[in-house]
View 1 (cartoon, rainbow, N blue to C red):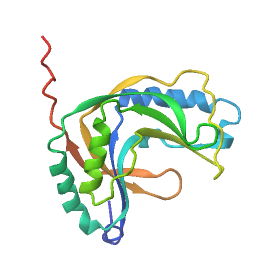
View 2 (tube, rainbow, N blue to C red; view 1 turned 90 degrees about the vertical axis):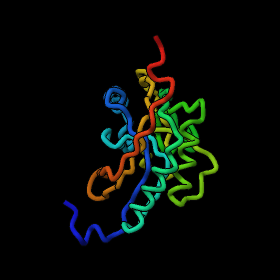
View 3 (cartoon, rainbow, N blue to C red; view 1 turned 45 degrees about the vertical axis):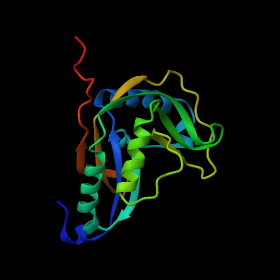
View 4 (tube, rainbow, N blue to C red; view 1 turned 135 degrees about the vertical axis):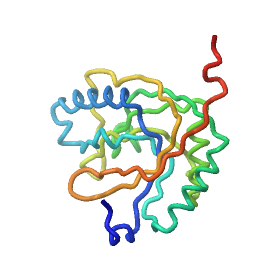
Length: 199
């Protein structure tokens, strides 16, 4: 339970699309194999599988009193957006493939649906829209600030389609160990007009 003192402190928030459980499990199995490669854990600090998501807007430190009106603005902004689908697969690194600080699992936003939602959410949340949007799932961060060479996987990362039917506001709780994420609000996208039309 959140205490009154804790609720008065600024919150760390972000809007994201959650991963489906089936893909999360397949990706977790891939990461277990990846971490079995000698030296990988020496170079990379892996994120918790329970925290995997596709970030649309990172708000950072936010005053609690501003959260409810911001949620309503995002709900209103997302009204025109229908549920969609994107493809996932591949492994890479930011900022460079040969010397990366972030190891990521790729999300293919071929039709720009995620990018359009990210821009809309960022504006509704009072942020300046990012110049470029690269949807991904952060799997690990380099232990060296200068970055590290991404490992060469022994098995291919899973490939899957992701149904994008909701956007979630998460609160990040920092402390000992990996960050813990708490769901603050969920926005369900309206069903696509194509859903169920096939005979």
